Image (cartoon, rainbow, N blue to C red; front, top):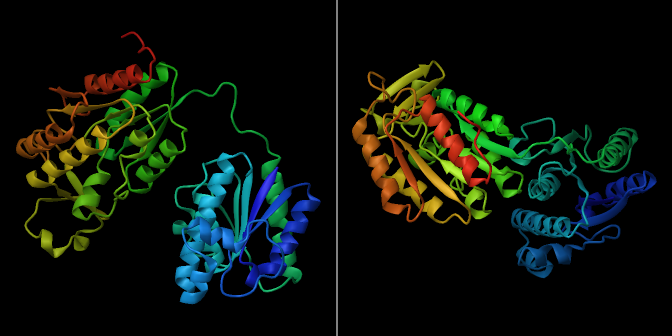
Length: 405
């Protein structure tokens, strides 16, 4: 069992040595990573700061010449993440523990977010009692409040740092988390307006022997789905609800970033993709809709959520984007288009029913999809037949057999 202990030894050398000694007492091998820069290190490191900055494509000399702490921290974060991920892939990292304030937390959690879910990750931070979402990201990072500043060993820091070492040792001894009965994982994307589709498709997939993880397409859900695909944890992806792409393109509040719909393709994960809820862009209350959208078709989903109908031109570009991303996929991919509506609101009599915009979405897909198969079904996305079709296509791509009707 080997833990990489990340700290800036110019400011946290004493504390790092203390944690390392507690880990050693617990029978854990420790590799100390020095991510410091401007001051002189106090204590020995297995991974030196020279190695850290070299891994980030820079050098300690360059960082000291520039004398910019912010740039040094960002560069160290990239370097430590690169080294930790490389060593993990080589089988030399079982967990990561880091200590620090703002700089140390930025550096330590960058390395943690580079690792797959399930690898123990523990950050002892002076910032842990505040907003930490940007440090944790979409990974299972455990944040431990240092209570006092990490400035020497005292009766409070001694307890907190000892517990941190014990917690890491305990996580390492917890054993493998897989179970002999675990089924292959499939990830599916869902929104309230595509729930009937995904629930029915999930039943088909589960009947075929798969375990289905459903992610709410609210930004964080899409990011987590991408992360699982990147980490090699998925047998397939049923990306029915790609609505986060609309928020990214148009400026809504639920974007999952520009990398949405790329990880499965890059890593060869079979995927069946549709256009669920691309008829809408998400804002909070009506007052949060930007003035530039005055005159657009709006629908108040509730007092906290206002939806805006995507225009025909926006739909055309969204189709092009999906086609481009799937055309670049290294694994099997198919597109399924529901010709009668792409959300619960895009139906005859619904607030976002717009056959012209739907036609532009399809045209955009056709422009850029290349050789990727596109199935155009005369169905609504929430029709049971559509759900069964997308599930069975994914099962086929994964090399399994669909259950009998």
